Amino acid sequence: KQWYQRRVRGNRRHTMRKGPLVIYKEDNGITKAIRNLPGVTLLNVKRLNLLHLAPGGHLGRFCIWTETAFQALGELYSSESLPRDVMKIADLTRIINSDEIQRVVRPTKDQRRPAIKKNPL
Image (cartoon, rainbow, N blue to C red; front, side):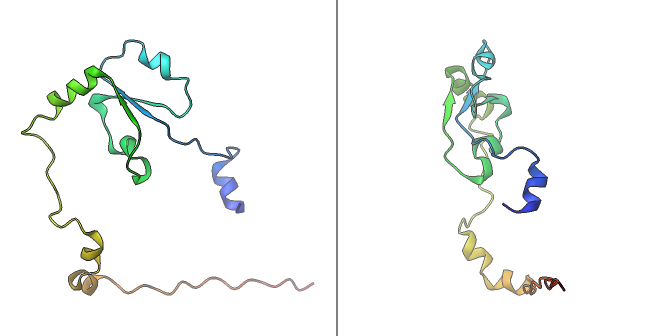
């Protein structure tokens, strides 16, 4: 470990891994039942968030839906208000490496590290 990583995290050595996500509509004692399980996150269906569904940008988190929460999705996201595709071309590497983008992007700078001071003793 680096010295600066210990200072930032303090006395917490390990990070808690994300476990399953339980999505509910009505709290009928579900928060008290699951709040003590380590790594399990509870989330109301009205407060769905991409950071909870895919933490760190990693897709495929295990989600447990209650029946009422699954039915509430139809009310929240009716066919008229479904999110549309923002990008027409989903190939991001092709977009970044295209001539139009590369012409505008500044060239990378050389990263110079400071010289290591030698101990005179």
